[in-house]
Image 1: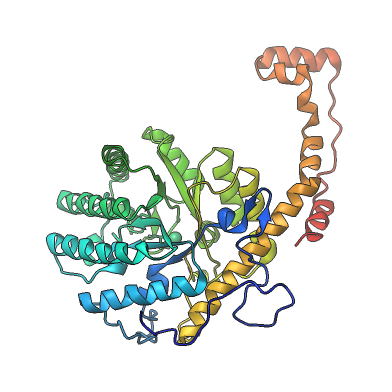
Image 2 (image 1 turned 135 degrees about the horizontal axis):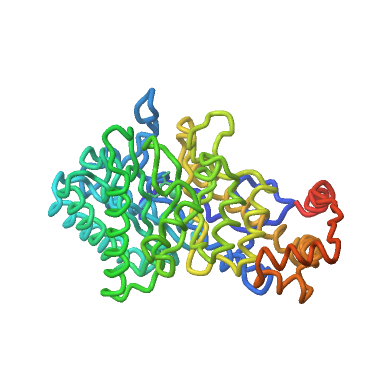
Length: 434
Ligand code: XUL
Ligand code: CO
C-alpha cells in the first residue's frame, strides 16, 4: 500500500445536510432507485489516463502535477502508479476503472517491448484486483499519441501502420479479456484527416470498417463476452474525425454490417464539440438500440475545446439519465469519468474531491430522472402528442401510398389544426425535479 493519499478516509454517504467536503450527499451506493441500487445503475469508473497518467501539461506549459511516479518511463514507477490507483479506488469505493495501454506501461519504442510490458503490468494489476472491489469497465488502445499514428491507425495510408494497429488492438483486447473487462472501446482520434488534399476518404473508411470487423471476429474467437464500443467525436486531435457523432457512427456501422455487434460509448464533451447536447446523442443512440456506455464530463462552454472537466450541472445530467433509464439502463456499460483536474489542482485531495463531486452530481441526476419517470408527466405529454397515430386509419396510412393518401385528403377534406408543443410548460415541469 502506498500513502499518496495519506490520511484521506474512505468517502461515505452522509446525506444532503452534510457539510463534509469529502462526503457523498446524494450518492448512496446501496439506495434502491427504480428497482436497482444506485451503484448498479451508475456503474462509475475512474479513467487511468486523466487521474494517474496525465502530468498536467497544456499547449503552453509542461507538467504541473509532479507525482512520485512521473516520469512514466520505468516499470517500477508504473507499478507505483497502479498502487496509487488502487489506493484511490479504495477511498472512493469505485466499482470500475478504464485504461489505455499507454496509461499503464512504460513505452519501449517497439511492438514486442510494448506487448511484454503491457502483459507484465496487467498481470500486476490483476493481482491487485483479486483483493479489491474495483472491476475493469473497459480497456482501449491509445493509437493517437505516438508519432507513428499521426496519419491515422486503421486509416493510415501506410499498411505497416494498419498492421501495427491491428497487433496493438489484439494485445489490448487480450489484456482486457484477462482482467475480466466488460467492454472494449475504440476511439479514433486520428481516424480522420487534416486535409482532403492528401486523403482518399472512401478507401480510409473501407479500411476502418474492415478493421472493426476483425475486432469483432477476434472478440468471438477468444470468447470475450463484453461489448465492442466505438466513441464518436467530431474533431480534436484530427481536423475531422470519421466517427463524427452518434448518427454518423450508426450509419457507418450499418454500411459495414456491424450494427448488431458494435454499440456506442458517448461522451458529453464530444457531443458539445459536434454541436449537439449530450441528451441528443443519448437519444439518437437509444432510438436505435445502440447505447453502450457513457463517458461523463463537461466542456467549458466558452473555450470551444474538449476540456474534459468533471460534471457539475444537475439538470443536464438528469436529462441524460432520463433517456438512459427510459431505454432500460446502461447494461454492461457504465459512467466513466473521462474527466481531469484543472492543472492548478495539484493536491492529492483534489483527485478525491473531483470524483466524489462528479459521483454526487450523477447520483442527483439519476434520482431526478427516476422521479420524473415515476411521475410520468413527460411520458403522458408524449403519449398525448402522438395519440393521433393510435387510430387504425392513421397506422394503415404508413402502408399505403401517396395517391391513396391524396384521395383521402381530398375526400375527407383533411385540414390539420395546429397544436401547441407546450415546450415552456414541459420545461417548467422538469424544473420541479431538478
Ligand atoms: C478523447 C477521449 C478518449 C477516449 C478513449 O477525447 O474521450 O479518452 O475516451 O480513448
Ligand atoms: Co472519452
